[in-house]
Amino acid sequence: MIQEVLVTTQNAEGVTHITPMGIHVIDDDFIILPFRPSTTLDNILQSKTAVINYCNDVRIFAGCLTGRRDWPLTATQKIKGHYLSAALAHREVELIRIEEDPTRPKLYCKTINLVNHSAFQGFNRAQFAVLEAAILVSRLKMLPIEKIEPEIAYLSIGLDKTAGDHEREAWGWLMTIIDQHKQQTVQS
Image (cartoon, rainbow, N blue to C red; front, side, top):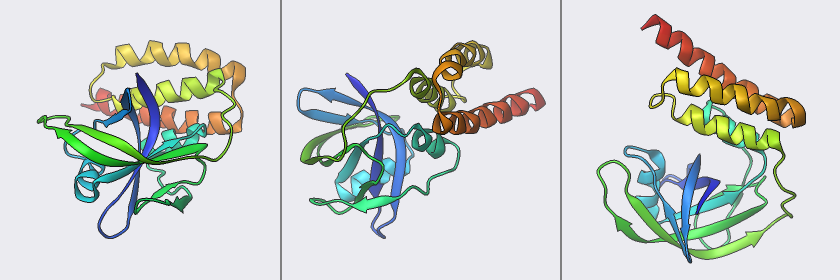
């Protein structure tokens, strides 16, 4: 199973990095698969820890992909690091094994601490649409615009029907990035 989460890591200077990521869950293992090169990969290899944040504020997912990375953080309890203050729950994990890969190594982690902060009320269709659009934005260099445009058109239906202010704001950030990408593609 793949869970869409926000991963926070910390470098040796204590700077926290936030990234949206699909992590794999197999039994009790959590597999983080960052691409090379990446800050997330460097930080986990250095610290041997990470925090998996379960969050329903889709602005954070969209924000991380559109240059908005200044989200409130709270210090973790069992490892050196931070979790997102907006997290409904967070899982502090420790690296236990690495499966090397030249493109995307598999970082197997085990839970050191799991904390629930607030009940999850479920996603509405607009939150789902923003998450899916964020995944498309993260793959703009890999997918043709002809694939992205119809998916965005379909996702916008659910967004239009169920979005609140947060979802509209996040959607706007993502659409700006897609529009910029289309303009750059036309100019190339």
